[in-house]
Length: 262
Length: 321
Image (cartoon, rainbow over all chains, first blue to last red; front, side):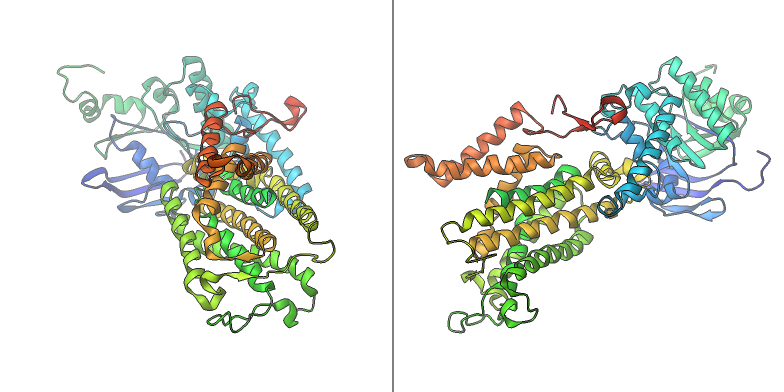
């Protein structure tokens, strides 16, 4: 938070789906080392914004910069290479791969992922595999999934799949992690360990997080600052305490209700 | 013959079983591999019979490379694989951005284009009359009535070699990335994988294998014509083999080839109407339905890769496969 250059800069980003403007001239910064929250009512454009930042969707106009470098228009695997790793709101695990394999897929630049390697340099590959497997097991311990290492990922519960998604981001040694509703469908105990994991990764590994979440307890506990979106526009930005008092935010969340209290 | 089909099933397994590429244009690579081998080894054309056929063939006896016919067989196998690889690279570069159904239509169309090319461009390969008198490997070593046993051994050697190569590469991280792409392309990309590059590599590898299969076929039948490579016997029976044997399992692919081919050929000896080709296709259909109902993953389904740490074995059978 003391650092001067933002890790991620979103500038005047627009995304249209046909006639619907999902994201409308969004601009904000994410400072390195922070856990930044992104909240807003359903349909505010939060997940779309994640898709734009990570390169899953092309943007209509605007620019996105990472570390001052223009990353507008890069594809998913290219933003990954720059250290931007995302999770999905609805987990997208590799169902017929085991939990361990799901993680082993992640590390970048594996020699064994070159087609010739298995035929020409099997020992190097085997050596590398042992390292990746050890690391994957370590990450699984970290998120309490080690006992399921050999289970098919498709057989996990929704909450466990969420943890697997988080584990996948930790395998990658990312700089910026985009978490899309990590808490949804996760029970209280798992949620606490999830929050601990995020805080630890942030504090110990210096990973920056940008997370979408509806659970305000989790947001208040983890995030500072918090960015609020509604109808594709950023309507407020500040500490959790500040935004909870912001009349515009209350309006967006409680719009139609009369005299409702947050 | 079943061994040759097993080679195709193995190639299709690389496409569909591991990578999820819906290729229903196997016949295209089949034809290309067979024609490549045939053109490289066939004896010089008789100008009376081959009016419009300008390509003389018979590189083996032209002394282009003085290896003799038998070594040219090996060159032809490699060339057939290489030709399919190059074509797959070009086709794949254009079509692999398409998903599932669209890729299927594209591959089917390309396979038919390849067949019609050989049919209509008579100067390339004698059009509908086809190429014949394709020499055989180690011809004359055994009396011709026993030759088929020798060739069976040749086919099995090639099949085992290809099986070992495919098995090895599919158990490597490269194969794991392919399976991840099969499961969820977007998530694979979000895990930093260049999905297009992996798919292209897999497409080329599978096509090379199919090309080798085509070459083996040409030297077995000793005759190739465009009519050989219709979608039914050139593509769909191979799909039947993979579905019956088990997609995602190389042994399954080979087993499926033997089972389906056994049924296909065995039914020829049934009495009367039962040996009718249409009825035999019907029986292959019944077999597919039966396998899908009883064992959805095929006779040998995909194996779950369990780490040695846990099971002491590298893989165990999947119970519900």
